[in-house]
Length: 377
Image (cartoon, rainbow, N blue to C red; front, side, top):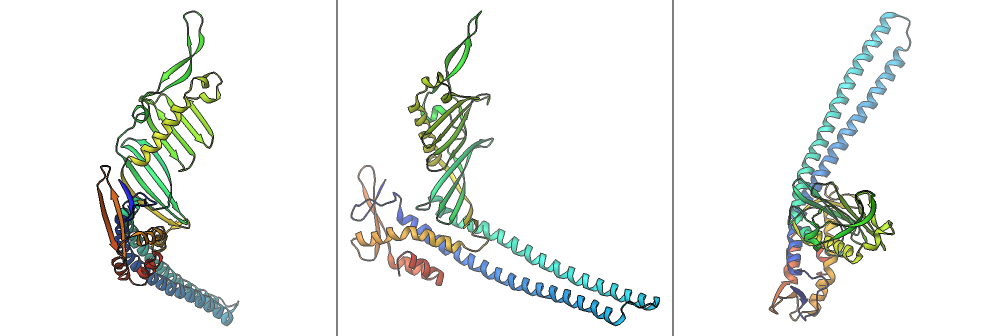
């Protein structure tokens, strides 16, 4: 599928931009009211907490003054009866003050726990609401991938950054396990082997690693890749590390690329091809993707009620495309793209600028601000 503007100029992102816009608008409509309610609840809890904290501080201060008053009135009197009286009064004051402070601290703990529990529910709700938007991928985000073979199959994690925003998704893949042969076909690697009946002589032997299973994978999205493959019995391990211009290959505990004899038998184009195929598999054979965290400036954006700021960052990525759609379109006020199938069939999809603005404006000042970021005001 090829995606273009209405004048057939290719879109800068080869995606169904109209669908992504609708997903974005739906996310805004679902999430912003929930976050607004969370902000209101958080503010109520802050006011309650401040009130309880003030009472606690006032009680502590009054108790200290009461003790000072008792001391100033009675002092260090020599009469046992008066000292006993003083001690009894102080003991009673201490007990009353301690009970009052414990009651207030318990109320503070309950208020805090209630908010934590509610925010935990809200966090799950918002992550679920945002999942369709983030599942499709956020334009301009720099992505990193990791994967690992588990007893339940191949599982992975994608972490992505867009300016100060970071999000993470759990991944599953379309195959329970992945063999090296599936990724690239046959691969033989050199290793030292001793042979001979009387005299054992070390010779280079080519070992077939084609049936090894993908075990772990880490890719920083740029130039660093580290991956391991294991034999079905997990008794043999192939490890490949690529960073910048450096490529290192290990078979079991031996670094083949550091051995002047073994390295001669490596076909580096095959190793590079394997790395390319592995990266492609992890990126494009995702069966399911679930948003698990959303951070802004390194802190939880949902618990800090900053999802609105994250949505504005996403909107910034759409603004240039919207502007070009409006400029290159043939109908004023329509955001239009064309989709071209492999057989040459073309279809158009569009959103009216007025429709987007109207839906967002119903969300109040926050919706209007997002519309402004999109360039629709």
